[in-house]
Image (tube, rainbow, N blue to C red; front, side, top):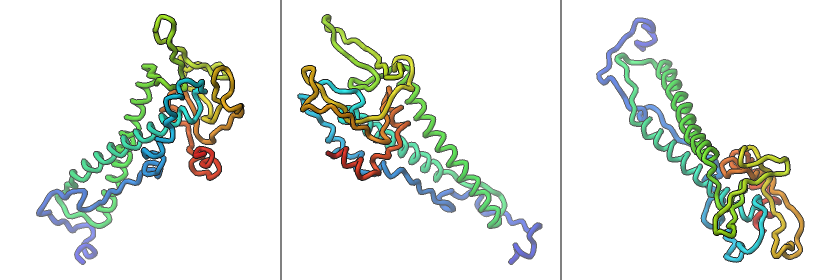
Length: 238
């Protein structure tokens, strides 16, 4: 071919100066399997509907039955957020074109597209992480505790004013001053009228699901090991 005969001197001008990325490259994102799993469906989230009598009981803030719904809803939000950012990035990528005045060799095209794809991947990951960090900093910085938070207790006093008390864990770490506090989610004794309900007084931790002052911190620290362990998964569904 002419390219082999004149490897250094061959130069051909192009009839068209640009070609869309989507015509020479294909980007197919792969998301974490959890994002399409049953754990983020309404059926699973309904498991945490404890009924109207739950408010009459005393719960440990890290009890999986109490905190689990917020944990999985947050994962659902993070999955949706990530997919939206990536889908937008892919659409913008496909709308961009490669511009060149000369015909490129196969080696040059391979090198150019490789560089473009690497930059696209790094920029997209950075966009997702930037948005995640923005949410994380906003929640912790503004002390946005939920009503069923593992990081604070909200109680109504005699003047009908809601009091806020940051939870202090066994290591004297206060959720009012640090986001590093926390421990494992688990099944803790439920108290009613000062007594353990049904006489249960056993703590069963849930491996890989970590409680924290804020759900976003809990999600960041959790390995989700329990969801991939049949015996632990059976415990959650009992």
